[in-house]
Image 1 (cartoon, helix red, strand yellow):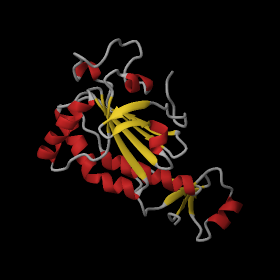
Image 2: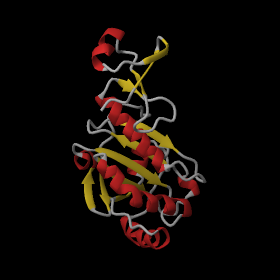
Image 3: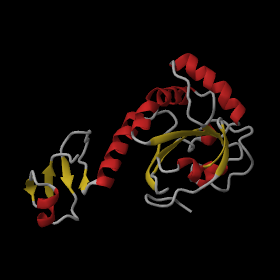
Length: 219
């Protein structure tokens, strides 16, 4: 079954570098960023994990938790973490799932369900689709999905930007325009009538078109 935005994120129990977790319980009342990697000891993923370790405090400020996934066993993750710290200057302190049986990868459509066996003998190339990002809200629903090609490192600053947008628009009746950054003008949601907008946005708005109402970021 394919996953869509606003679907309940599939729950699972998994071994991680910080012990066994049940995903929904682990999320609790926070946001969660689940990001996966094709294989341990691979170059692009090493840079990604190091950068996420560096900016993890930024996610914490936003009430968000990080959790990585690779189809290799947890013991490999611990050894890989030493390489990441040595080469990137930051040690991952967030949990990393050891998805040796490919259960989570298949559950989240990262790999075809008909792939048989475990991660044993599989290469990064045969795990090519295990390179995804899922943002899950406190309501356990999927808010964002991204899948990257093997040779392109992800832009995790963009995940922070999107998280800021999603948290803002969940609280206020606005949407964010192209390339929006926190503090910049926003768009009044189309579901809000002009009459209601007067109460919600007393400072007013600019409307180059009736359907495009631009106002200061609330809050």
